[in-house]
Amino acid sequence: AKMADDAVGVAQLSASGTASSSTYLRGDNSWQAIDLSTKAGLSANTFTGNQTISNITPTLFLVDTDDNPDWAIKNQHGTLKITDTTNNADKIVCNYNGHVDFKVRADFENELVVTGGNLSVNNNAIITGTCTANSFSGDGSNLTGIATGVSSDSQGNTVGGSNAGDSFTGT
Image (tube, rainbow, N blue to C red):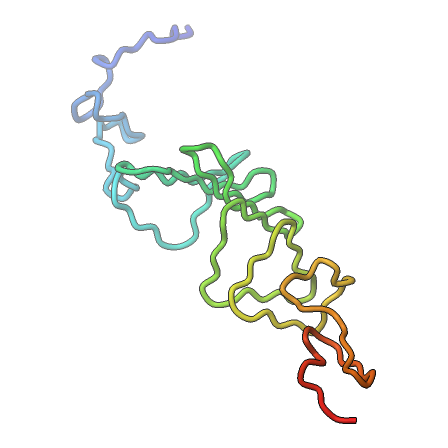
């Protein structure tokens, strides 16, 4: 005859140990406490070796309990994002095609080197210090702070530049 489901209660088991909310029935028919000493605790853990977070959008949340903003590092459809979760704003986005969007001010302590491509500035470029380049392009019509003009001395000698002929002497 078939035994009905739930026909045997916990009291009818011949298991050793004590059944409680903090124990489980092990395969050897003994009640055992769950040993979490080898598992990651809820605070101050150090992980060694490779760690994998697997999900549709795997995310590591960094929640600062005494200040804002809080952050998330996530892989969203192949795009790595660093997000300010307090303000729901992506700050750095590493796109799957290799281009990186900085949605914040980026300060480079040493230097920014661009190789194998162009440096494109979509707004104003403010340079304090010396700007050195191998070449510049454009017609120069929007340059400021450069004196222009041509003047000639009394003998028709022409020297270019602002006030160029003022101190010209000779015949």
